[in-house]
Length: 133
Image (cartoon, rainbow, N blue to C red; front, side, top):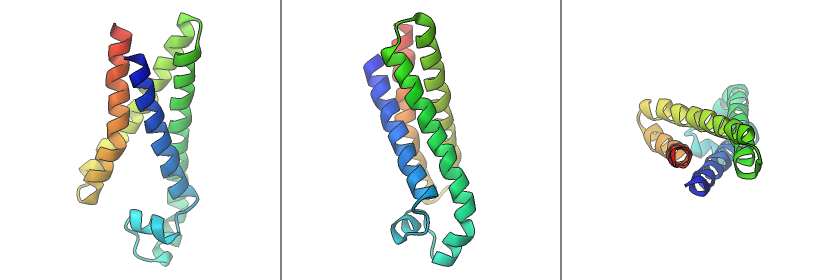
């Protein structure tokens, strides 16, 4: 169960790194504008500071999850493993809650919320099974 949880946590972190790239680096490109339904370059430029900031939130969640994965997967002490699971559950839980907020806004956001929330949800569920067994 632990390996499956860590795989889903890696996938969740990878997705959030990708979102960081879109929001903080490629925000004004046609592909990213289409992904986020931003009709014009002018609107993208207006919202660019907000997207830049939001992108870093996603990056920091990904980094936290990756550090948790390292602690769980490569620690020799019980205390370090607890630190790892704590980081993993906190960051994946934050990803999941953010995805739920996104999905509740409706429209195309429901699909995006489901995509963003599935891997952290599975990481949490398999992580809880790993810890319980």
